[in-house]
Amino acid sequence: MEDPSPAVLTLADVREAAERIKGAVLRTPVVPAPAISRVTGCEVWLKLDNLQATGAFKERGAANRLALLTAREKATGVIAMSAGNHAQAVARHASLLGIRATIVMPRFTPATKVVRTESWGANVVLHGDTLAEAAGHAHALALRDGLTFIHPYDDPGVIAGQGTMAIEMIEDIPALEALVFPVGGGGLLAGCAAAALELHPALKVYGVEVEGYPAMAQRLAGQPVSVGGPTVAEGIAVRDVGDGPYDMLKRLGIEVLVVPERAVEQGIALLAEGAKVVAEGAGAAGVAALLAHPARFAGKRVGTPVCGGNIDARALSNVLLRQLLRDGRILRLHFDIPDRPGVLADISKRISDAGGNVIEVKHQQLFGAPTVQSTELELMIEVRDSIQGQAIIAAMVAADYVVRRVQ
Image (cartoon, rainbow, N blue to C red):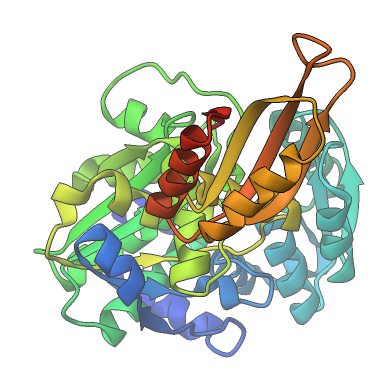
């Protein structure tokens, strides 16, 4: 590939990238997801790029870009900026090729991500409090030391490498009618859209962003970019999208859907329970789009990647518990009860008789209650479904307990 402009990236460029990365990057499976299909009303196929060695699709672009380096560039070394998956991808493939790699990460980067990146042999430099500050430092080091900067998404070699995902999906499941890809900087969507639409012009290709960071959707709509706030989809929480990907997506007429934060959490939980797949927030964004925009995909065969599985265990646990609460499979009840012997035992028996399982008890007897003759009780109860939960509440009310549900 003769360093094409991203705006004219072709299927041939992506096929060449596929040949370059063959053997260095796993060709991940595309699997049916019947449990997710039942919930979303479409036939869902998942591309499991969370099975890559570093747990994310970023290896595709990194492997292709590094393979395009000249002998002099390989001898001098490369540098990248990332707080996550791109860092590990560049580090791994530089190590495989015997290339010296420096990765600049913001100071707030979790220690586990720093350690994983260093484990691939990269020199990690912690600088700045934001990704923008880390990027500025990385560019300064590249200029000072003559290093080649490997951009995470605004680079034709990276974009072509990411596009190999779409070729594999279409080759494995030719009957797909729509593809949905998460959008951070836009490299994955741009590469995949260019390849997919040249293979099948009638195929519908969509991007998806989380509502706190709809930068690409805003730019495509000609609106000023306004983003920010916490999100579990930190992998696509990007303020400045790539100019190359933006130009490509605008030329191809690609629509970017925006989903609420809650849909991303629901997607993570649905993938874990329904498909037995661990996904980070960005990796579940495609499923979130199917949940948030069901009419658009109803009855269609839809492919979407689980593009990353690098989610913190505590975050995953919190998401799953929050979803159980929303689904009514965990019930939180607050009681104002008389302070006398036997009340706790009576409440516990009534819950047990209704089939519930008490998993947490908070009993405030001294200071929280409105009078010294009463006490506050909060219970977390595991139930089969919301119907069983309502039956437990009804049993409490029938026994004259003052109870309210806590969401």
